[in-house]
Length: 292
Length: 135
Image (cartoon, rainbow over all chains, first blue to last red; front, side, top):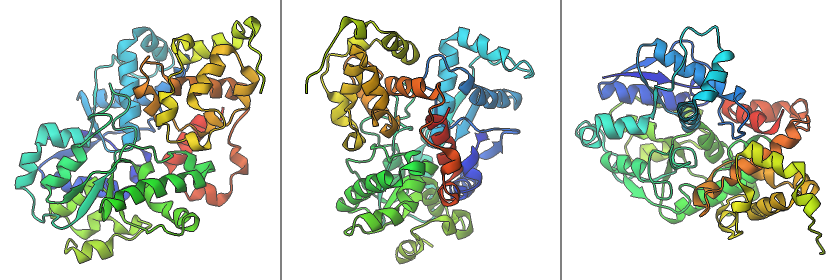
């Protein structure tokens, strides 16, 4: 199976652990991942202003790159890229006038984009194309005795027409973790916003959110929280430093991308997990469970 | 506190501008408060999300433009997906931000951010923050 892949900016730097673990796991699952050529930033956030078409250009250019690769579907890993690319695509598909205006700003592009690319998240690929049952058969190292709380955040599930699962009670990541042999932990904060980009100018706000989200997961028995967004990962992992300073009863816990857990189960090497990029070191827990 | 509601304020250009930029019909809101009940950022807001809509309906321009609520909102869309009238509250928040940003009144002063603030966070945080909070 060949898959066209859009990485986005952070997957190549702070979230290299997300990318490397994904590429290794998909290799084990027999997927041929082809990174798009000349991709650019997706814009990170979908512009909500009705008259602000200019900010959709970055996403449209990426969708044109997909067409240039002679395919009509693209896979993303980052929840923000997924949301932005998919929403922009839906916007121009449902509003051809806006597409016409946008074309005028991109007359150097060889393809006049028509809104005909399917934007998909890796979780959809795993669930619908590869299928969880097939993944179960390929598990080499089950995540037994590991209690994982899956954190979905905002942009994988909202708004409804964009989300890849039930917007109030998503379970897709939990279903995957169960297939990998982990114990799944449901918790009420799984779709509560981590504070997102407020982390730049209001890190204390994010520290409070991290406190609420992680203590909720811990109270349900979670040993690790799995995520699918590099910004959630940064806020829930690296902002634990500020969280611990602000809340004396806070106990730090490791945060892992769901793909790192998938890669462990698929028998990938420790190098592909890039555990050096974490603030809270997941190695002691993973060693204790015999997973690395 | 005494509040004066006037036809002049309600019919002000500001109300039309918010409706136009957000693409929302403000008067559809019947003030049930569900947006405020589910908002994770509400603890830090000076005006609750349902009040943002109410102020916008009534043309309380100064109060809205001075409120910190629109800058605390992280567009998580919890309000949008739960509104029984289908109003996109996050879009209204964006419209209020845009009214200020389009006059070059940036919320985040990029040159004033410390090297640590800039280097300590990933690209995804900086780009999204500047897109939302600067003109």
